[in-house]
Image (cartoon, rainbow, N blue to C red; front, side, top):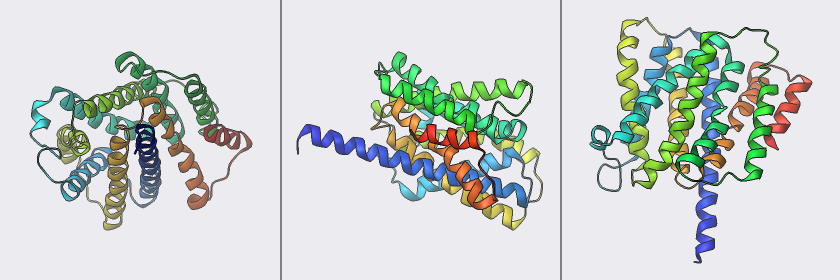
Length: 284
């Protein structure tokens, strides 16, 4: 097999994994939305369930040892620790901003990490910023603004907007860090486990302090949603081994589009003309 053929196959595998990741994250968001209609669940608990299920997926799917999941690295590798702490805090911040800003505004601000990540990758990884990718990212962000109706809410700027911006910066830094960790030889499972372990350390105490009874239906939705998020995170982490940050991140723009389509199919919502234009821009 020629080097060019191998390179194309590796790139295709990365694209397939990133698309599967986007589908899983879309399913997670729609399930969490359905959860809101069943029971209002504390954000700390929701985040912890995601991390616990993620760890379960890792232990069930990956072996432990050289060239595989290496738990000891979680305590020894500084970049893994940083990735874990920032990733855990970022998941909680995203859920929190969705609650206080609404899904549209929070999703738009958080997804600006696509553009930020491409810039960070140029500076930190010396990845080229191709003109087509820059134009595509700009179109996708414009489309997302129209799709989420972020400019038509009439809401003023609040501290949660600042938190959402900070979350976007953190997300951009994390995707660059994932590429660095792959280059250093860390396994996908170890990189994902860092988020789960340190996320639980951040969220476990507050979740216990705010504990309230949860119905069986709510537990079921949380677990299924967490499974989708866990598979999505594993696929995305692995895909960044094969894809540049800018290209991989841009594919995640399909998530808000999938959420919008899911809103029509499952929650009987309707697209306004400017939202349809936004969807088309994201696809372009």
